Image (cartoon, rainbow, N blue to C red; front, top):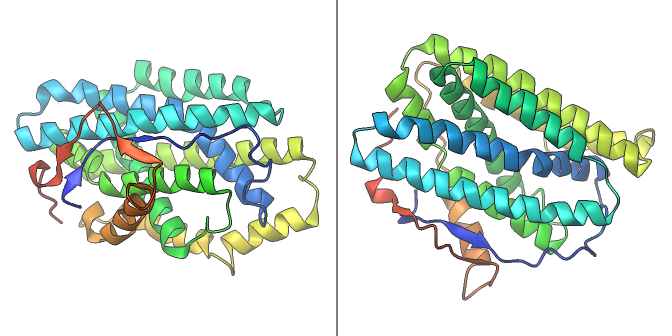
Amino acid sequence: MSALMPTRSFRAPLQTDIPRHWLPANPALSAILNIYTVIVPSNEAFYIRTLARCLPSIEDPAQLAAVRAFIHQEAEHGVAHKRFWRVLDAHGYRYRTLERVVDALAFRLTERIAPLSLRVSMVSCIEHINAFMAHEFLRQGILADAHPEVRAMMEWHFAEEIEHKTVAFDVLRAISPGHAMRLAGWLSTTCLFYTLMTLGMLLFLAQDGALWRLSTWRGLWRHLGPGHNMARRTLRHLFAYLRPSFHPSRLDDRDLAEAVIARYSPPRGDWLAPSTRGGVRAADAPASTG
């Protein structure tokens, strides 16, 4: 990672006059990222509660510092995405019932019935999904035509997912190194995540009146197929996670994260600022091995 893994606050105003289709060339992709932003706050809270439960059992000071930095970064993500809900509200979207149901059934119920090791495995897998989404969206410049404020929020989030992508995986290896637990987390997480994303996309497209437009599905096809090749790339990343030799650090995309952070931080930009939550030096984080 870069020299520092700090906590940053996202300061863009996120005014409610942001267009309904803030990624104008592809309403389907706007809908996908809208449901993503709806799920993020409760999802991030689940990460935080899960890894916080692991803190008493972590003896390595470097790993302890890295987990605390991870928690702080994820907390800031939840705050920023929840601010974006005001934009969704201004356009009349109905999504809060879905968000409450997802939080109650996907996250709160999981905490009550699943052992800690499985919950950590789920966090590790979803962090892998977040990290490879970040890699693809940033490497391909998929958000280049998005509204500037929403692009900044999404790209900052993606950059920090790259920064801390090894943390949850290393905690999983420490508390449950067996491959069976990694597979269990992968199965439960991928099924849940892509089901929620698909249902949420359909919900937003229906409210846009765009669900039955041929242009909507052409845009989705371009994203999944010949344009961004996200279907093929997603499958490749998902199955790479199951290799016994897998480690998130094997995909070195620090340059992507560093470029984004520089773009939105002073003196080049003014939408990122150090948070009072603090951070941790990457040099103090646990070594990445593969």
